Image 1 (tube, rainbow, N blue to C red):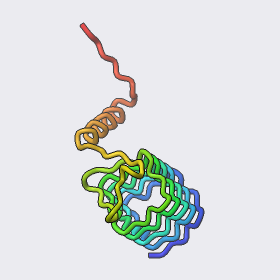
Image 2 (image 1 turned 135 degrees about the vertical axis):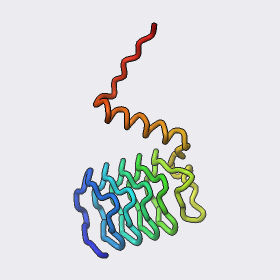
Image 3 (image 1 turned 60 degrees about the horizontal axis):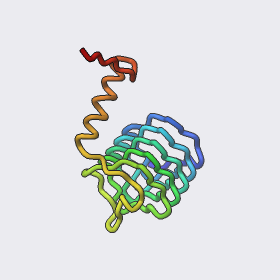
Length: 143
């Protein structure tokens, strides 16, 4: 698959499970996008904005992320083997024990934060509660 989306604005797009392998996504804005389970292998994401994007369980093998912004992105379970991360911003990006990194990469040195299993469970529980109740405010009565 080859797609040329050079500098496209895909802010908040829902691309979960999409096949974007070998796509030219140079300079694309994917901030807040849902790319969970997407295949981005061999894609060019140089200078891309992926801040706050959901890349959980995505295939990012051999992806060029040179100078990309992944601040606050969800990389839990993502496969980043052979990914090029030079000058990428991973500040506060989340990863977990399933995330596969390129050999020699220490995600903590890049500013990423490891998600513990129990924190991920709590995050999902609170999100489901808010979606069901329609509010983030919780009334607690102490008697």
